[in-house]
Length: 495
Ligand code: BG6
Image (cartoon, rainbow, N blue to C red; front, side, top):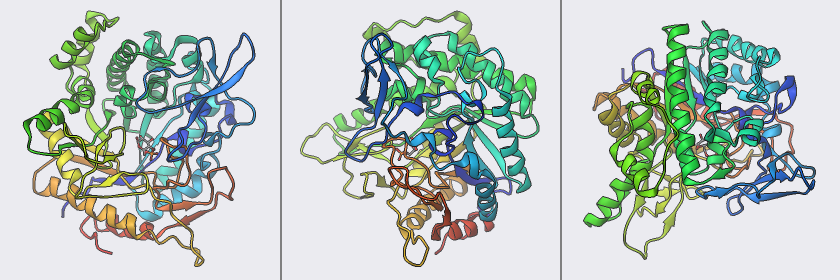
């Protein structure tokens, strides 16, 4: 048997891309609610209003860009005449029973979802929680329990309450630490006995690429990003501390966006480039899972004149309460080089040059059949903590065919290679792995492009890029394939 009986097979989602019901049950707005839809070659936009003049507009939301996300004086806002995919998304809010039943049918042992912070504390800084929001997740967890599905809850998945972005400038402000800890503590206490596994910040290293998405930071200067990351680290440590006090059985993990970087050539300059290019990613795990700031990052801050607003107690907390386990997303690898004349490629949060050995999907993301074994070994060797793959999968413009089915053989092929590589890491290399949750198990909105067209799921949802469709659910071919994978505990990956 490749995996032990406790191995948590399942799927992953996030409220901002899946839940919808954006104002139902007393929910407040979150940063995702002001993001429009984009496309492969057209960035999403952040909409805004200037409270002094009433003027409205939008600015391109560009991954990897620094600087202000909305013009000086303007506030991110929902404005008339725009389409916002998060507002309905694929409507888990009203379909949770049906969806969890489908997960049960596939044999899920685990369902990763995020609690939308603004559903519990509509403004983020409220003194008391919104009971209706808490009740919604009670119902969701009770439904999971019916099927023996363990929830894995992300506390913040690109869902900073919008009010915190406007009033405090987002995570740059240390006061967010207290607001977050109040939120986390409320949730930990409420769901004792229902939820055992939590993640604090989805892809915490997203701070590096979009401070607005990761931390509601409107002005993404290097200084603000560094401070935002620091505040989230401290908040994570305090969340670990609170969880262990409330119930020693609770486990709070880190969530990192990870993709190995390969050097394009054996040229030492390429090798060095690949090594250095990993530091902005590893830094986040060195602190949150490793418990201390690495020297390379302190030197970088010193060179760039970045000074953190911190206290000596912060560093004690980081060392004392590191994450209990390290979870990560991994879709593929990337390649870097110092040489020009090599084609560009795309990928999740990291870009590089084209890998001539790999195939890519329509969005340029490469499928790497060895990536999970490589990633798992790299992370286990460095941190010696239990790992959990909480996102992996392939975005595809699936089509519902005339026979009422979705024949997604490309997804099965992708997953066969990835799961085989994951299995090798466990059986041949001895990596400690808690579970695997495939991203977007029921179709949902793409975070990067805001499209519906970029689908990941085992279940097709009838909804298009402009919000048309019945929201009806249809299992794809991969649904039945994954059902067998889980039933055989990963032994049978065949077609
Ligand atoms: C991860 C995020 O970056 O990748 C998810 O945690 C996201 O929120 C996923 O949806 C896939 O990216 P995309 O841009 O294809 O949705």
